[in-house]
Amino acid sequence: MSIRVLPDVLISQIAAGEVVERPAAALKELLENSLDAGSTDIQVELEQGGIKRIRVSDNGSGIARDELVLALTRHATSKIASLADLEQVASLGFRGEALASISAIARVQLSSRGMDAEHAWEVRVDGGRLTEPAPAARSGGTTIDIQDLFFNTPARRKFLKTEATEYAHCAETVRRLALANPETAFTLTHNGRVLLRLNADTAAARVRQVMGEAFERNTIAVDVAAGALRVSGWVIRPGAATAGRDSQHVFVNGRYVRDKLIVHALKEAYRDVLHHQLNPAYCLFISLPPDAVDVNVHPAKTEIRFRDSRGVHQFLFHAVERLLSAPVTGSAVPDAARGPGMPSSNSVFAALQQVSMPLQVTEAMAFYAPVQESGVRGQDSGAAPAAQPVPEAGPGDAPPLGYALAQLHGVYVLAQNAQGLVLVDMHAAHERVVYEKLKTALDRRAVPAQTLLIPVALTVDARDAAEIGPHLAALREIGFELSITSPTSVAVRSVPWLLKNADPVELTRAVLAEVAEYGVARLLAERRNELLATLACHGAVRANRHLTLPEMNALLREMEATERAGQCNHGRPTWFQISIRELDAMFMRGR
Image (tube, rainbow, N blue to C red; front, side):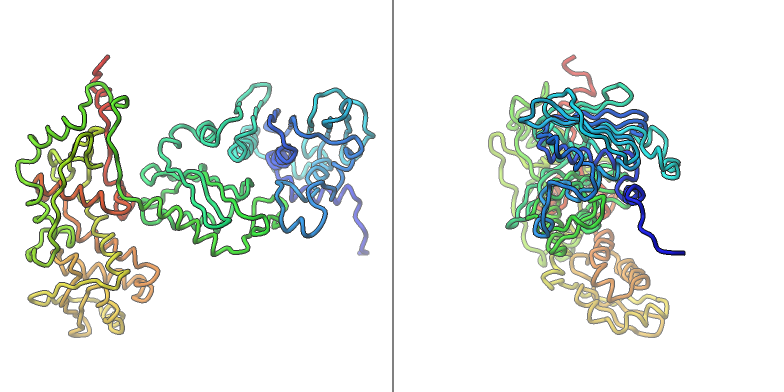
């Protein structure tokens, strides 16, 4: 078969397969052109999910009469003129092939009026055949009307989904671009009904409009910069994460991207606080110099490459991880924000002194000091530093987690703070405290060991004994001194001091189980935190253990001083706040 040059129309149809996968892809290209033109008001009209019609009108700078035909010509663009421009693209569009590709597979009508033009001009394209510009009526800006997408490529058309599915993709495209451009108003109409109207507003208001008030209530604001690299936006609190991934939005220099490096950095930032298979939600805006990122990776322009990918990964990871690591903080609730019947901070503290503190907190802290270090009541309190007494609260002053009132079913601590009622899962909370102390000690290479008065012997699998044999020194670094007494038995001579009152047999079996699955080298490197989490779980105070009020108060103070105290090592929440207003609503007070 001889080699031949393909016709221009066929070339455009082939290119359209990369650029225009579905109506939403065509809509994205049109919206990006409108935004590049400086539009502050964009109207989107769809019919049959965009399959029948996509019409986008804007109030941008418009297109001159002599350039209308060029706008629909392949590789014609106003965005770049040289390789240097390509290496520092600041616009959303730049390839100059989207409109030509769309014109090859649809019926297109383009009308536009420049800022200084007397009237608008219009061109039409039907399957790649262009008409001459003709006068038209419209105000400043551009309107592009696409009808019967894929009418001349039925093989592509049959792969489209249902009208509802295609509309959902189009609506998501509008929302994404709206998030990145809060200063622009968007209106989305489908089959004659206005389904989305977004007025120009602040970034925070736009996020609330697009992602909902629940997202806004459960997020933490991010704004971190390092030189020319900056990330801002919002990330979900770990306790509000869900299994879905539909609320993950990242924009690089205003462009929505799907980048594995960014996703991995954010997943790692949440790894220590997220429960099982839950996924974080976020809306983040990353800005950096245009020449530090390559956007010319794929025609769809949602894939990018960073010049310094490792630097961006580490910056993003540490920015979010530090935010999620912040200890519990709180402040007195202003009088105007208190619900009906909510007492002042002074009366809260006075009531607590009468109800919940018959013993001195100092006494409890001394009792609890070994628990801070070991997870259970210690026998040799001299090994732990003396705990400091809780300072007396002044007017309008109270600790974030308040003061304990009681213990419920040996599992939950009930406490009262200025906002209302605090519920604490004592095992989960103490597990996090112990875990963070283990990590800190290991980072400092200072994990103290508690020598057992009588070594404990346990029978193990021969493979486990053989596996740990060469790594006894490494295990000693994390506080475990083991010796192999026979091919199938191990003697435990010391355990980490922080876990000295946990069952040494259970602790050792937990370590051996991890060793059997991952090997010692991998366990102490990439799975180090998972191992420490397992050990902390064994060392934390158990359910059904009775705590005195001073002990509970000591645990609350420890939580306030511990990073990531809002979740245990497995991502479960450790505490919840129920405000006075919520309590009043439960009992219909003030109605």
